[in-house]
Length: 337
Image 1 (spheres, rainbow, N blue to C red):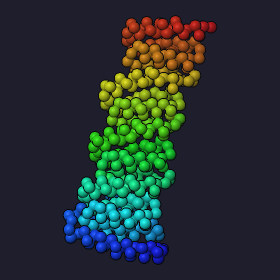
Image 2: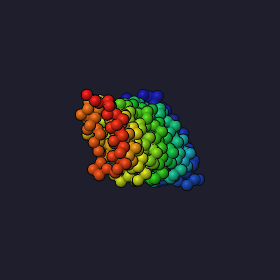
Image 3: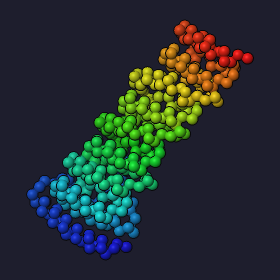
């Protein structure tokens, strides 16, 4: 049941806000054509907000009144001033999501930018750790890419793990701009290391990496992903490509990365066949021998050492053969009977 204090407040707000809207309407241009039902685009579906609210809270009808009043405003400042009054009735993130819907068809950029500022100023007050981060996170309602990224940053306050972070980095747009993709990539680079822990899903790490727009950003993600590695198999997956058609600069960097971080994946129980498979991706003799050297941690006896010294390439260059020979000479004494 709605408390009487809310009823009196609603009536007072209605009276004062109608005066604001009516006074402005005669003098200034409109900011959009009002719409009678407020909806939001969610994962490609249009959902009526009122069906998502618990009627017993009493907040839905009050916020609907605010949106009706906002639809009568004729300037951006007046629209946001009216919307601000609706914060009185917001009790949770769903109410806030309802309040921040735009009661105009095709709102202007100025309105979206002002709405973005409004969302940024208040969103943090309503996020809770158990909120579903797969809900629309208000990014599609703001007016600029920096505002969209700022919404993501605010959502980090309730992100508990890598899965939460992955949800926050999803693209809420059906067609996103390069500017947005670059902004999101930078956001990922700045924050990924705080959310990767040992045993986390390598597939999730690669999904996030695949959203990066620069080689540098991608390898910040890969480097953070080393924290999740628990075996040589998970390391092999981490150092694979996160892109279906990577640029050469990315491929070259990946081949160096897999050789120079091999120690993160090798343990005494590691499969030497997997180590050789990783070595076969190396682009230089020096990196190939780095992988073999890292693999020594898995070679527990002479038989395993001999397996490690096998050529990882079907048609090795002479320089590689000579390097393997030196490797045997350097480490073979460890395994003499």
